Length: 245
Ligand SMILES: NC(=O)c1ccc[n+]([C@@H]2O[C@H](COP(=O)([O-])OP(=O)(O)OC[C@H]3O[C@@H](n4cnc5c(N)ncnc54)[C@H](O)[C@@H]3O)[C@@H](O)[C@H]2O)c1
Image (cartoon, rainbow, N blue to C red; front, top):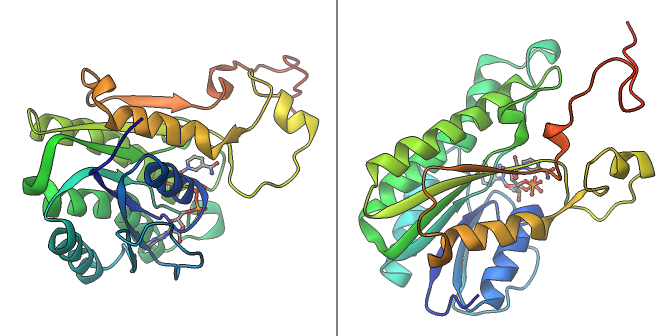
């Protein structure tokens, strides 16, 4: 894909999936603008790219970042709301504040960035939100994260309708994605119907497609990328799985 001249904003671009997106968009000719709470730890390849160390929980940081992007580039083409994290939930005593922080980063910041950028999208503008299969299914003690991910799925279709005719808004729900290159057991891999764990590129390539004109009839949608893991129906004594009380 050729994204020459395109400006793409990626939140949480310091590492993991966001970092992979930055590298691929840059390789495709785009100028990238990143906000991350981590200090930049590697050299970005293109001097026209912008990295800002800021906290998506803080309104002022988001305002400064958005203003700086517009000052530098005068427009935005794609916004990828990727940053999120978990403060766990009920069983580990996640506080009201800690719960709220995850919602701020995972839902509030994507909303606010969209509000600040909405008048400045170029033609063919697109937003890609990163949710999780945990928006739809849960392990115990995951309330803060699951709520944020459910929130961003709903935010996606709401914004797609509000921004109709101007910006398409879609969502990706990753399953288990390897962001560290560690070794996984055969069981970890083979439980997935595709027999492997996800790669950061699995998410990046779909994000690039959802930004491009090739996907211009896809809008307000959530697409799960989990190797079929969340489609596997498991009952006691199925799939080598046993319920233990
Ligand atoms: N890796 C997976 O298996 C997986 C699965 C499902 C969904 N996801 C989602 O994909 C996205 C990326 O995940 P990842 O695995 O690459 O995570 P990661 O933790 O490696 O990267 C997230 C980035 O967001 C940044 N960030 C966190 N809080 C921030 C804040 N307050 N302000 C600014 N930046 C902040 C972090 O510093 C980090 O660089 C997240 O939304 C995550 O929920 C990941």
